[in-house]
Structure formats: structure tokens, C-alpha cells
Length: 235
Image 1 (cartoon, one colour):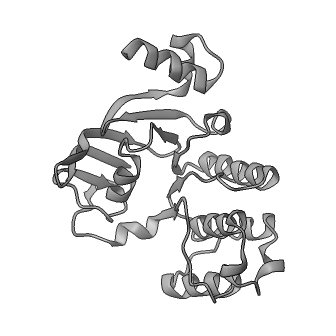
Image 2: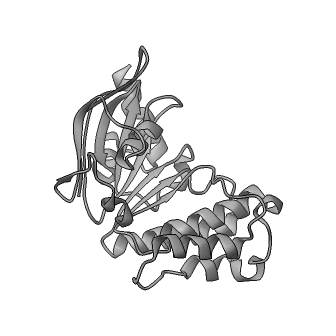
């Protein structure tokens, strides 16, 4: 579904991505993890067309994304920190995005109901807590039934109930055969969600493994401990 081949990216003299190769397929929930500055965000932005690689190719459904933009309508993106016009209300933001997208697809309003956002439609964005802003971002990511969901630290700032509701939604969409990419520092949040792990370090992919295989080869039951076991062997 998404193929990343030989991607390099520099900002000045800083090498942010170094010969990155990944294959991401339908029905998988893939965690993209690694220390701060490892290149995760740059890689996501390259997939979204927000960063142009210096070298290599990215294909979406076997078609190169370079100089294209229509493929993005098949992607729902939830940023780590959503930024919206301060004086617009939640309801106005959602209606504005609907108008911009002008989509004839059936809208997925599950999260609007789950988060009870209807009760807050008249609240201005500048008055919202970080967690409520995250709820709006999550709602917009899922709203147009995209084939691919890219979720950057999706549970950060959410209260425990909202976090569980979002995780349930992620699992539901994965079971529909969608591709889901998640970045997270909270590895404990991922145990019930993900099927594959991509670990990045210093702009490179250190490993890309199925969760079941990773747990089996490390003889661990928790993802965080399994990753720590692999990293100890590579040091």
C-alpha cells in the first residue's frame, strides 16, 4: 500500500533520513518508534508530501506520490499538536473541514459521539484543554473514512476514558483492513493495538518486525521489554 524505497533527507548538513526502506500493507497497525530526533516525524511528513526527499521514492497504491496530491484524500492524519483558528468553535472547525473536503462519502462520526463533542460544538478552540483539542484532531482524522490513518502520539494528553475509546476505534478500523501508522513514546499503550514495529535511530530503520515474531524471539510478553532486549543486543 505504501512503499518507501531508499529515502534520504538532509536539512543543511544534518542527515535526518538515511536510506530508509519500508513496506506498509493494508490491515496492519504499525508503530513507528524511536528516540527524539530519530527521523519519525520527517518520515511521516514525507509520506504526506509535506517534506520532499533528496533521494528515493514513495509510492501509494503502487503510484509515486511525487508531484501528486490526490492520494492524500485517502489518508487521515492526526498531528501530535493540532493547531486551529482560535476564535472558531469546534462545530465550525468540523463544518469547515467538511466543506473543504467536499466529500460525498459517508462520514464516520463515531468519535464525535464517543467523545460527546456535540455538547461542546459552541466552544471556541482557544478555550479548549489540550486533551479536548486532541479529541477534535482524532475526530477529523477518522471523519472521511480514509484507507490509511497516520496518528502522531494519538493518546498524548487524553484522559484514560478518552484514550480507551480511541484505542477501541483504532482496533475497529484495523479490523476493517485499513493501514494504521502510529508514533508513540508510550509503549504500554500499544500492546493491544499494533501488529508490527518499526524502530528508528539516527535516521535509519534499525528493525521492522511483526510483533508476534518480536515477542517470540525475545521470549517476552510486553512490547517494551522485547524492544529493550533487541536494543541491548545491537549496542
